[in-house]
Length: 269
Image 1 (spheres, rainbow, N blue to C red):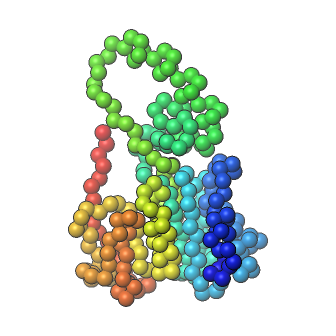
Image 2: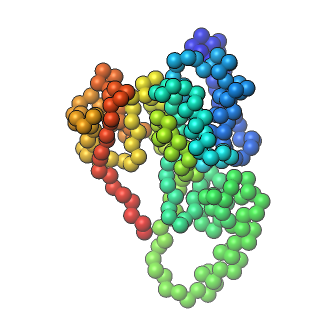
Image 3: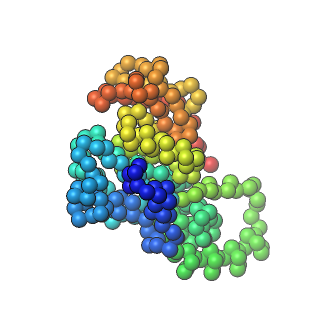
């Protein structure tokens, strides 16, 4: 698709709306590899990969990557496609880390939440919740839980509800995007229109946008370029949790950019 393609908006919409009846396991890196490798629909001979042009792969997913190969294999493949500074892997995924020792609470998957078999975290694709989820077929919380029929224990107070999520934590995607000059955005927050703008700018200007891994406290961000503190020429965008540079003052390709800030760490309950 180019700017001159007839009916571009309708064609784009029909291409990205894949429906909900496909294979349940999402494999973003694998399918990107299949599309771009020799013999794929977007390989070097297709005309899509142009010499000296910037290539961006954007993966949007509400699940962890189920690609079958090791991440090192996909990394080596992606860096082989382009010269340095001409490739980036961006991800729009669930960035909320699971609680230590706890399952994932996913309101969009049947059987998710307290009492659900598997809980959604590491329990495989969502369709399994329809076939053998003990939360629906044999949960003792409904059939013989002494907490309802004769529990003599002392009430210790309300239990904090589990964190509600819109997907599964995409740890593989986050790590790979960090290694491949990419931006990671949270699929559970923000406005999609703003996200598209961020990804577009980052694809064409890889030295303008720097994603942060935590939410910074107000006024705590300090940025250095090759050891020199930069007091102007950048802004913090809380929509995507990124630092964006003014194009006229962006760091050079070989400059070392360091961003430090204070943040509040969530405590375990």
